[in-house]
Amino acid sequence: MARADVKTRRWKRVEYERLIESGFFQPGDPIELVGGPDVAVVPGTFRDYVIGHPSQPVLVVEVSESSLALDREHKGSVYARARVADYWIVNLVDRVLEVYREPIGDQAAPFGWRYRSIEVLEPSASVAPLAVADARLLVADLLP
Image (cartoon, rainbow, N blue to C red; front, side):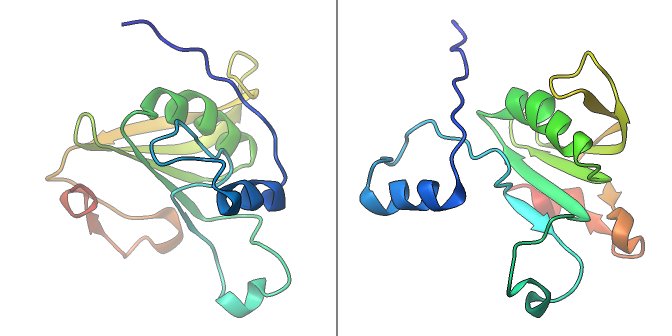
């Protein structure tokens, strides 16, 4: 199976929203918004972000099937560079949760950073976010 090259384009948020509203993107188009993660857990309340978007999530979770390689390599490097301490990939292909922690600099990584700790958890395992260590979740509850 041939691998298509990933083409990227940097848009401002307002430009991206206008493209969606205008119908430029069609259902099924292969679009991945880097920096627009599936779930971001941030500290505080919604009132803390009335003026601007949060800048430092305590946990980012990507739900991944067709974008698995991109989420591991490119997005993982972006999040590590941003010092996101807790990055999870709900891997729908293998039905596991990949937990990435301890961002470190690495010039060989796409954005110069990667995660030192990578743990792959089966559906029977449980996991707790670093920000709330006593909030254990069953991996099976994160999988469809």
